[in-house]
Image (cartoon, helix red, strand yellow):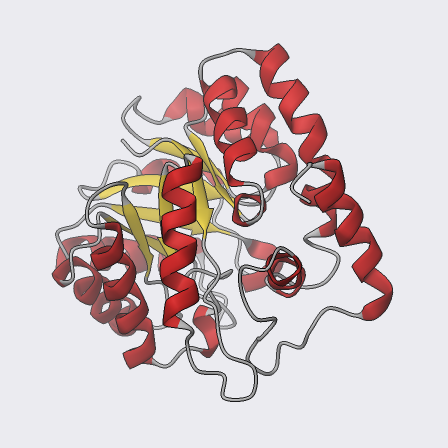
Amino acid sequence: MITGSIVALVTPMHIGSDAVDWDSLSSLIEWHILEGTDAIVAVGTTGESATLNVQEHASVIEFIVSKVNKRIPVIAGTGANSTAEAIELTAMAMNVGADASLLVTPYYNKPTQAGLINHYTSIAKSVGMPQILYNVPSRTACDMLPETIIELSKVDNIVGVKEATGDLSRVGSLLSSCDDDFAIYSGDDATARELMLMGGHGDISVTANVAPNLMSEMCRAAISGDSKKADSIDSLLKGLHSSLFLEANPIPVKWALNRLGKIENALRLPMTELSSHLRNDVEAGLKAARVI
């Protein structure tokens, strides 16, 4: 089981051309491994999956897998609102050596719970790699209910869920109903510490992009049940948990990484750079976390 601080890695780009910045991506990977990040999600929401074409999507995943070279696990974002496309992307991820896939609920077309079960079951039957469900209704307009997750947890290859609602009552239901080998990950940095102290297995994190060492230490403390240490570290990170979502992710986190000198502040339209009146808030979060 993959546990701990799992960074939802940005995809660095060049200002002007919007081309992927492979050198910066390589540097970010090495930094995360050095700082103690436990695993990387490649081309998830934070990685701007919605604006990468299929070839770029595949190339970024393959590049990250190659650069990581089995030092830590790589989870490939392969979700789509078409089941056939999700199968194609997941098969690609398996073929280039990713350790698992992360499959967001189909967005915009708003399937029923029965549709979600059929969607995920079809992918699991078609591609023989570990698959993690991803529920983030604030972005997809599709809420995968706990009872649906519990049913899908019994399907071969479906090994976990990223629950990004921030609703800890759902987490309690999942922990009590799913088998012990089914991983429950937070997708909400603000409540991740509490989820892990409840028995969850890790945090697929935006904050880890800019504070990888602190997030790694906090996750390890929380998973081990050391609430005092986890609380102490998380208190330093609260400003980032909040400020990195002042505008749609990954707008603030890319600005923050640029402020740290890690990447150019480049996003693909329709995403635009962080509004000027919010920059002081993100800067304050970085200072509170002692990363600048």
